[in-house]
Image 1 (cartoon, helix red, strand yellow):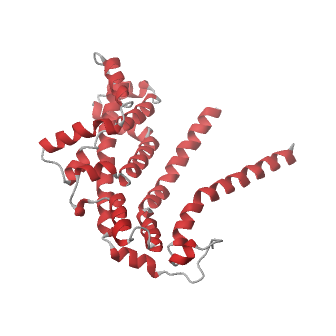
Image 2 (image 1 turned 30 degrees about the vertical axis):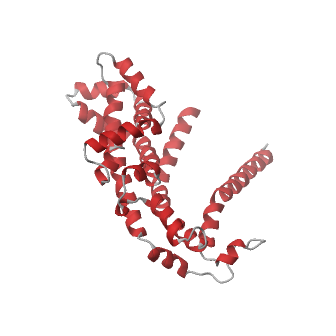
Image 3 (image 1 turned 180 degrees about the horizontal axis):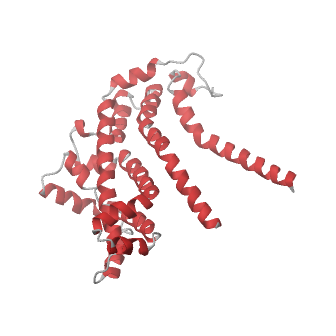
Length: 280
């Protein structure tokens, strides 16, 4: 029995190692391709490490386009959207789970129904509203048009449903206001769900391409995805400078990797707690 357990455990770790390697390989290939010459990228059989690493490709790609501006735009816009969505979703989810009011079930159903509507279906009315508010081609338009998300409300609502209503009632008995109960009781208990929400929302809006391109025309407002495409078309000469394109792609995903490294501990802690709860 003990030998069989060790064999299963070893096979399990080998599988996880191979799976992790498969997931990490595209990133490795992108980073190393940035260090190759254009001929090395297209040679067959391919090489896994350049014969003479071209470290200057990263600096050349950084200087050929204003990537510092693209990165700043994406980080600021995505970061503010994360904060607003977390705030709005927390208040809405609290109302749907731990408050009593008329037509609560119908209101919840309407919100959940909105989750079934594809985002592209509301692009035209959203564009017209932003135009009437004179928010096109601005940071405010990019942020306010994304400050509410049905998915975020659904995610936090599911987390709040796992919290015993007795905690909320205890806070009400002690004289705490709704806002005090929300931010002092519910949010700390469901912190891992907010971390997951922040991670998903930040990645989504950091990489957003179509909607920002639709409502902004100023090159100074371009986000990373649009800036990378512009570099591919202009600086990359339609793929004739693949090492520079790979270098640009590498440092544009760096903020996402850093964000995941900071968030992974909380996510794994939440996973372990849920796993332990299910076993118990």
